[in-house]
Every structure is written in structure tokens, then in C-alpha cells.
Image 1: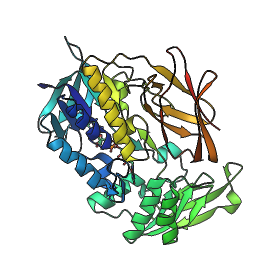
Image 2: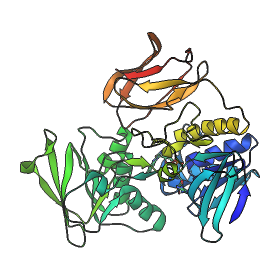
Image 3: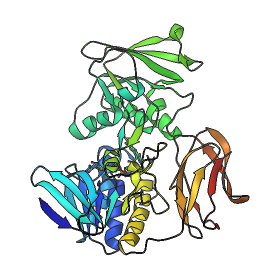
Length: 415
Ligand SMILES: Cc1cc2nc3c(=O)[nH]c(=O)nc-3n(C[C@H](O)[C@H](O)[C@H](O)COP(=O)(O)OP(=O)(O)OC[C@H]3O[C@@H](n4cnc5c(N)ncnc54)[C@H](O)[C@@H]3O)c2cc1C
């Protein structure tokens, strides 16, 4: 087996992995970036719509443009080695030395081992599918996840169907509704289980209203019909949380696109002994974004699903700073845990450094206008700030410079 040594290995070359690698190199460390696809960029490569980079680059870019700016940064840096077509299969202890060994497979070179001091997990997320939401009916072809359909259209050049129904009104579902219309398909409707849309208002207007695509709120697809190929789906309004059979109607279609959520891709993390947070599906991490496995850090969608590539990159840069501190032997710092209180689904990271600025990301469990974000330590309020609008699908980002002592706990509430 071929064995190579670097200061750090970054697994995945999406918006997070590339940002982490660039920052580690800026800190003077040698980095290998391991990416299973044939080019860097991750999910950005198939997102040919605009809407990336406003926060990070101050410019509105298409996904591939955003990826290209990072790839250029990495390719011109001699400390970074980007290896595409390489799939990481395991992470283990490094024999006879501190650090980790990362095992990978590449069709041309076979099994590879990379001995490193630190590992950054940046493997992104995967889509929930029909099995995750259990739609009854037959099992014909023509049922795709929205991300797969996006890849087929934008990268491979195939149109998955002609008469489309979409499940899920998050931004990916909305963007795919418009995309399918643009390639000449008929989009019969978007079905959303919640009584409110999950995506940005901008996307409701630009992707649905501008194309007269109906949005069925508080509805579900209650049955799929078809033998070889999807022939129709039954759509039911919810009444007391259950499909109302009396008001169910049929839409004849050949394709059903599912945009029903994303799950951090952590099979590899689990194998490496990383403990996962059931709320996010990603690793438990402290203030330095290090997992319970010493020297293994996580950022981007593998840690928790981000709405914006910019925030995934921003978080990854911070993760790289902490990984660099760890490599340099400067990692020990006091941390204070952050726990969730009223109406907060999760807050990430799960601890903060006292007396310095920490950036946190959180998701609300409620939909509310004029909400308040409250951070407390015991009886003291650290933050009490108005939030114009909160909803579960929109990430809340904020900074906290807490005057707290070791042994205290910070609580987050949304009221
Ligand atoms: C359809 C869609 C539309 C979006 N639209 C927008 C938008 O308009 N604006 C915006 O800002 N954000 C948008 N986002 C969100 C944003 O693109 C993502 O949050 C961000 O790009 C995620 O970056 P990442 O690096 O965490 O993950 P990814 O981009 O998924 O990268 C992970 C990489 O890891 C690789 N990998 C995984 N496992 C392994 C392994 N074992 N070995 C080697 N490599 C591995 C994968 O191949 C992949 O390249 C959108 C996301 C989607 C899915």
C-alpha cells in the first residue's frame, strides 16, 4: 500500500472542504484533499443557478463559479495536494505515532494510506428519499430525489420526465420546479406537508408564481400509481394531521421529484468512532469543532445542513484554524457548553470559548414574526435580540462574546 504523510487530510472538496484546505495551507500546513468525484466543487457543481457567494465573495455567483474561485486558490498553493477520484473508506489510529491514518481507494492506484496529525471531515450530506418518508403505492421508475434530477439535467444532460410533481417546497424543490419548466417539462404542482412554504419567499415568487405552478400547502402525496413508470399520484389535503380521503385528487404525471430534506453523510464518521448528535445527524462538536475523536474535526453539511454555501465555507475556515492550533499543539482552551432551551431545535457548535467572539448557527422549532433570540448564563442575559422572522428551514447565524466562567452553561431560547 502506498503511504504518504501530510499535516492534515481534508475529506471532501465541496464549499467546506476547499475553504478548510485553503486556510490550513495559509497557516503553513501541508494538506491533502481527498475527493471521490472527478473534480472539486461538491454540490456546487450542479447548482448552475445564481445565489452563491454574496456573503463570502460579496458577489452573486453560480455554484460552479463559486467552486472555481476556491479551486483556483488551492491549485496555486504548493502546500495543498488535491486528489480527485479518491474515496476515503476508513480513518484509524496511526500506528506508533500521534495522529490518524486515513485509508482511501483510487481505481488507478489501489489502496492508499495518508498519515496525518489532523483530519477535517467535510463529506457533505445526502438526500432523504421515498423510503425515508414512506409514500404508499406501487414502486415504478420515475421517482427521483430533486438533487439527482438536478444532476441529470445540469451535469449529465438528461431530462428525467415530461409531467412532473414535486414533493417539498424547500429551496431545492422550488429551484427544480423552475428548472424543469425551463427545460420544457410540465410542472403540475409542488406539494408541501407544512401549512407554510419551507423555501425563501424570493424563490416562491421567482420559481413558482412567475410560472403559474400551484403550491399545495398542508397536502401530501398519499399514493403513487403506475406499473413500470409513474402514471399518477394521489394528493390529499391534511385534516387533523391525516390525509383527507374525501378531498383527495389525482394528478396524472410520469415523474415525482422528492425534495424532502438532507441528512449529513456520516457513515465514515461512525466507522471512525465519532459520536453523532441525533438532532443534526452530524457529529457532536465542542467550540473548536473537534469531535470526540482527538484530531478529527467537522464542518459544512457533514456537521449540520447549511442553507448557504457561504456559511459552510465560513465555518470550515474556523474549523481549519482550530485544526491548525491542534497540529501546532495549542489546542487546549476552556470551553462552556451551550444547550438548547425554548423553541430551539439545535445550536452549533455545542460549546463556546469564554471572553472571545464565537460564531453560532441555530435552527428554530417554530414559525414566528418578531421573535426574540435570548442567550442566558444562569440569571444573566448575554443576548436579547429581535429576530424579524424565524422558521425551522432558515438557519439563524449570530455571534456571541460571552462573559462566562468555566463551569457555567449557556442556554439559547427563541420566544
Ligand atoms: C440543490 C441545492 C441548491 C442549493 N442552492 C444554494 C444557493 O442558491 N445558495 C447557497 O449559498 N447555497 C445553496 N445550497 C447549499 C450549499 O450549496 C451547500 O450547503 C454547500 O455547498 C455544502 O458544501 P459542503 O462542502 O459541506 O458539501 P458538498 O458540496 O456536498 O461536498 C462534499 C464533498 O465530499 C465528497 N465526499 C463525500 N464522501 C467522501 C468520501 N468518503 N471520500 C471522498 N470524498 C467524499 C463529495 O463527493 C463532495 O464533493 C444549495 C444546496 C443544494 C443541494
